[in-house]
Each structure stands twice: as C-alpha cells, then as structure tokens.
Image 1 (tube, rainbow, N blue to C red):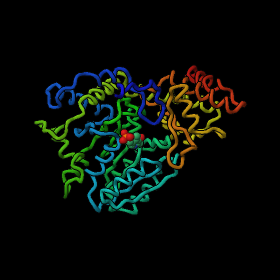
Image 2 (cartoon, rainbow, N blue to C red):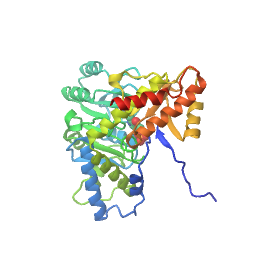
Image 3 (cartoon, rainbow, N blue to C red):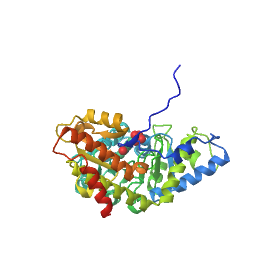
Image 4 (cartoon, protein in one colour):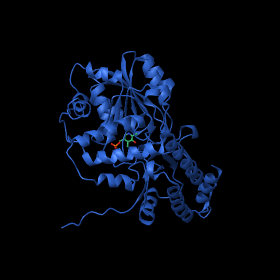
Length: 392
Ligand SMILES: *Cc1c(COP(=O)(O)O)cnc(C)c1O
C-alpha cells in the first residue's frame, strides 16, 4: 500500500507553477458543494467580477475555463476560427509556435511571422503581413513569452489588428498579475491567461475574456466549434445564462482557490503588484549580473516575472538545477528549444516574488557558481541585490 503523498516543501522560481500561498491552499481545502448550489453561483458571480478587474475589462464574457492555460488558448482558437480563415500568428518563442499548431488544427490558412527568440514581436513586420493579407481575420500573439522572458507591445499589436479589421487573440498567461494587462485599453478582442503563474493559484484553470466583436464573430459562425467541451456557446449557458444549465461539473474547489487568489491580488492592488514584480526583478537582475550572468532580453523588453540568463561557461545545466533542488529545495527553469542547456529561466511570479526568495536564489547560485569558478565571489549576488533594495 502506498502512503498518503506528502510533497516536499519547495520554493518555486521557475516558469510556473509558482508558490501558492497558505491562504489559497486553505481555500482549496474547504468543503466541496454542488456546482449548481446557490452559494456556489454567488461565488462564481464574485469571481467573474474579480477577473474583470484583473483583466481591466468590462467584458461580460469573462470566465475561467476548467482546464490549464493551454485550454484557454484552444478556447480562443476553436471559437474564433472557421476552416479556411486566414490567421496571422506572431512567433518569437515556444508559445507562438503552439498558437500556430492550434490555428492549423482549426483548418486556418496560417501566416507565421517570426522574430528571433528573446526579441519582442516586431509591429512593422506584423503590419507588412496585414497589408499583404487583407483577407486575414485574426492576429494572434503572445504578450509575455515565457520561453524567452520577452514582453511584446500588446497595445500596438492590438491597435494594428483593429486597424486592419482583424480580431486579436492575446496570450496573457504569464503577464496577468505581473505586468499591466489592459484588455479594454488595448481594445483586445480575446485574451486568455492561466492561474499558476503570477496569480499564484493552483494549476488547472484558464481565465479568458472576450469582447463584443469576438462574441459577434462566435454568434455568426457558419458551423459549430469543433470542440464540444470548449464551445463557448455551451459554456456560456453555465457561466452566463439566466438559468444555469449543466454543461460540465465545475472544478469547485479549484474555483474557491482562484477566488481567493484574485481577492489577494485585489487587496494588494494591481499597480502595487506590478511595482512589486519590478522591484524584486531589479534586485534579482543586479545580483545575477554580479555573479557574471547576462540577460537574454534587452532591458526595455524584459519581463520582471521571468528572467532568462545565459548559463555561465563551465557549469553543467542539469547538475546545477539538481543541486538547487536537493540542497536548497529551490526550483528554477531550464531553457526550451534552442535555449535548452544555454539558458536558465528564473521566475519571480506572484507569491514567489519576494525579497527572501531573491536572496535565497542568489545565495544558492552564488555558492554553486563560486565553487566552480574561483574568480566569482559567492556573496557578490546577494550584496548587489541588497544594494538595489537600499537604492529603491
Ligand atoms: C504556461 C503558459 C501557457 C500554458 O499554460 P498551461 O497552464 O501550462 O497549460 C501558455 N502560454 C504561455 C505564455 C505560458 O507561459
């Protein structure tokens, strides 16, 4: 007989999931009630309001999809694309590539616009593609590319979509709660996020929001979305209808947790949360650079919540990450695709974005790097971070 599973206590500073606070874990452990119970419906209505404030939108169609961020992505694509539609996808990392996969599988004519990994999406190239393809119906891009740590100019890209009569699909999985996501201000049409990054909730839910133009496109579909589970016409009957109709059983306890995580964000205030991410990022960056590491992304496009740095020469990527986990119970992220073995991705997401974590990470990396290279002072990282906090 196996015993009950007791996970080790970790500090999660990778690309997600991030540390979940005791408050959110406690919410998760409350008694399960029926998903059509009036008390639950009241909680759902509050949850929707909290999500609207986090997304900075008045969109009525704002809800958490009952599955992880990838399902939010798929919800946008399967509901907004019909076979034969031309879709322009910006690709500057892993997640843009996944958008392309989604569009292809929906039967779209996909036009991919590539930018180098670590660079933001180039609005000029996107405008060229929009001009060259006046038949395009959708422009999709990733706001915060977690595979590289680069932010793109969502406001400019959404404005281009509108100007060329396309709907925008925006991936805000890593951005929501860490940097500004201004759905109504940008005029974004369909935006999806995730719970396990800067919202610091458990993995497995995907907040989405759709504006009026996107809803009109869904109503005008000639044929049903190919996914029954993600079909918003059906999901809306449960989340939005006058009389809540059963579609699937909502993940009741996970939704308590999301309600609590959004409440925490609301109590802190969005701007304060962004400022906190920026502050700890500056301290971490100063420390990493003092330990001899260099950033992949130029300063103006860096995500505070996802720090991609080149692995110092002579260090074994996997061995260092294993020792961080074994000796410090600290998780950082490996590089993906062309960055595998080249780059570490150090997350400062949500609840994990704290001074003690910045210091733990710099202490641990300082120890391991100093051991491998006598020219590096093991304490240089922590000292530089502390100096950055003092200067702030
Ligand atoms: C994590 C992530 C996803 C996928 O979210 P899952 O919860 O892992 O399905 C999508 N896009 C970006 C930018 C992400 O960082």
